[in-house]
Amino acid sequence: MIHFGQISKKQFLEEYWQKKPLLIKNALPKFISPLSPEEIAGLSCEEEFESRIVTGSISMNKWDVKEGPFNEKIFERLPNNNWTLLVQGVDRYISEVHQIISEFDFIPRWRFDDVMISFAALGGSVGPHYDHYDVFLLQGLGRRQWTTSTIDCNPENYLKNTPLRIMKNFIKETTWEAGPGDIVYIPPKVAHHGVSLDDECITLSIGYRSYLNNEMLSSLELSENKTDAYLKDPEWEVDINPAEITQSVIEQSRRFLKINTLPEDFFGCFVTKLDPEDEKKFNEIRAYYAQEEIEELGLYQLHPICKIAYQLINQELRVFINGEIFNCSDIDENLIVSFSNTRKLQLRNKSRDLVERLVSLSLIDKST
Image 1 (cartoon, rainbow, N blue to C red):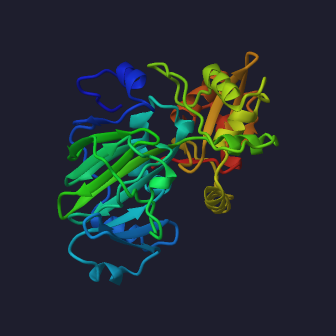
Image 2: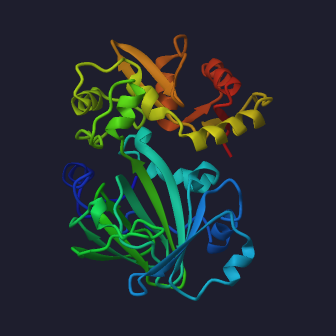
């Protein structure tokens, strides 16, 4: 779990989460990036990863974006400064990155989207912008200057004819410098601009997506609204179960959508459903592990690409994996809850039935 320094976790959840940005110094003491600049460049040359190279700066007032996968020779042609390499979804394939996510499990894991890693030369940036995401920006190598703003965070303030969403007018409200192990938290619709202060700068972005009203209404086969809005979280308890869907978020969703009741299984299926790209990747994983046999000893883990959640509905436990209800009616409740929260399962006599069922669906494999 990250260290909040001079504030408590309770104070962070009450005063900062989805409200205002925060610099958390030494949040992960002695942290260094699990990937080197050369390894990040190597990932960007592979088909499995979505990658981009952004060149430009505010002072240049010129931006260029190239989409991967790249040929390694492209890195020989890059300028000495003002460029950034970004690679999405590194947590899906790199176990050392995936392990970092558990440091943030004071936020429900079903809210988590992905980890993006960026490597930037001196002055490298993707410009001032805002998202509808909660994001923890974890510094892994070098230093980065972050400036934030809550002013004019609207679509009309984006530059036109630019390959990136970059704000035309960015009025700085706070300026921070982050070094290795520091974290900058950015709530939805807070503009932020990160600029590398060193020749080698690595930042990991741990992102939590927000749910769009019309996306939820479409899934419910209800009429969509004329204007978009994003679901806000309820006030989270200080100590949560990472995979649990609480009644508070169900009530929050119902009020948000302005409907009297939600179908019992809707929210769990909705928040664990894989996006099309992840679903494609998971189908490839299932094909690869189709013939896997259970070993007698060892620790199994849910595949990093998978999403899992559980909910108590009328005193009955419902488990959701990848947008579907998982049949656990004859499984020990404490066992399946523990697996849902930790995403890990030790093979023992008591857990054999659950391991066999999960392996047969290619949902778990041996932990390395």
